[in-house]
Structure formats: structure tokens, C-alpha cells
Image (cartoon, rainbow, N blue to C red; front, top):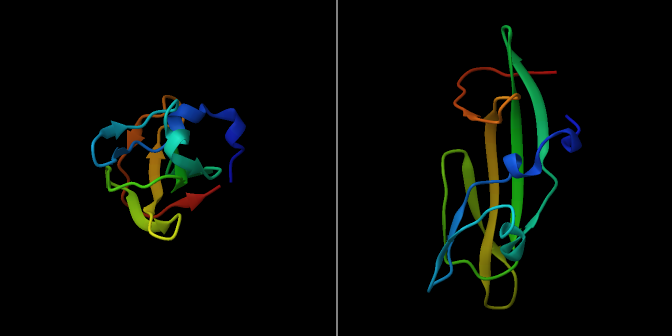
Length: 114
């Protein structure tokens, strides 16, 4: 597993939009912590043949009620209870990034962990 301090935290955060009932909000680095507790991302440096890339696994847990989560591929959304009658979301995102510019990559195949 890689040391996350060498990477831009903003590039690692999940890209999600939430529905709060009256508002639909796309979260960014400034707003995500208003709605979710962020677990420390797990970063793995991977390679296939002569190419290398990063596998990033993010997990966030809702702090307030969330009605819907709109997300991209590689995201699993689970129910997360935060009170007696309040449900939120636990979101686990797995993505592959180019290590130089952090662009999201599509990957299919076997991984070799370094």
C-alpha cells in the first residue's frame, strides 16, 4: 500500500452527488466533509506489463440523512443507520488512476500488486 501523503487529496476523493430531498448537491473537497466522514483512502501501485497505475479505494460514511446517491462506475452504496429513524449512506469507491495526472482509467484484467 502506498503512502497517501504523496498524492493530492482532492484527486483521490469520490465523485458523488446526493439528494437531500429538497436539494441535489454535487460534493467536492470543500463540501464532502459536511455530509460524510472520510475513511483514510487505500492506495495501491499496480502494474500490467510495462505500464503502472494506482488503484484507489475510498470509503465514506454519512453524517446526515441522504435520500439518494448518484454515482459513477466502481461505486458501491450501502445503507448506513445514523440514528433511530435516520438512514444515510456508506459509499465504497474503487477506481484506477494514472499516477502522473490522476485521470481515471478503465481497467480489465489481472492486477500485480507492487
